[in-house]
Image (cartoon, rainbow, N blue to C red):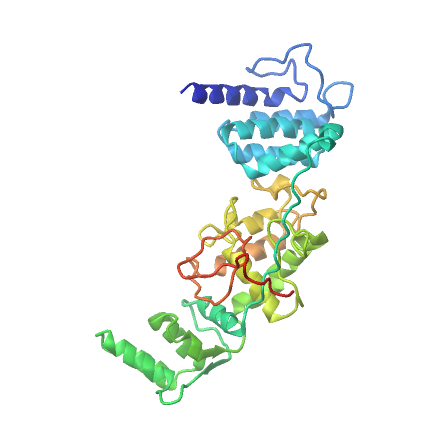
Length: 380
């Protein structure tokens, strides 16, 4: 109980100090003024409060003390303004409420380096960061299964090139499906019979996927890419390459937290492998692709500048990042949001042979393999 009271007192004290750090003595506020002898922040210019201090005071006064993410967003804003004194105070307050908040820890470490580089340089050297293994590429079978799993089952059938594979000694897939439906004890709908016997292949594909799931997925060769993947290629992947891959942040042996596959970026194999990694990634900040609440997708919020989102991209060791999308008003933002909204929901339970890289933060499903230490890393 004493520990809880102490932590709460610390948090309250820290929050009360937030608008005071920017030199706000004499302002219209009910919070106590800072001591007269308190020195000015290290990065604040001489001569009293600057325009940024007024803006900081306005933003800090509007914060809900319990809204952790809003405080982190304000810290990211202060980082953009190079006011690491404000970053430090905000992050310490956040960590007093949630000690394991990853973004606050990263921001606080950067602020400490900026405010006292000499002391930071004298710290005990950390262990070298382990390099992320290169993710292997998807096989043709897994690519075909991804196409199958991401088929939209509502609306008119999407025109696609589809071929049904017949195994030796077995009836056609259409007949197998008809028998399956009859075994369920339901009368065969006349429309189903018409589709299976005389429908276009994309109509048969829709019916088979809706009525039998993935049972016959390996007997259906989907030769063209469904619209959802072509939209991903046109509208989303270029932003991923421009933002996430820029400067090696998430590519190559020096990638941080997440690594994109190597290889020709125009190829289908790169397209589908990248899609799978993004679709399955579920880091502490939330899933990269949130099909339930598309606007909360971390992939989308990380593409925005800190001033446009409450969940900005964590600070990069190499310096400031260039957002792939500058504001929510941009067409690119709406294109990515529309694409995420077009995905099937909830997320399909993929049944793939793919071996996921060990660094990918996700929720493994029963029977899946993860790349272990004794397994050979795939060649780029």
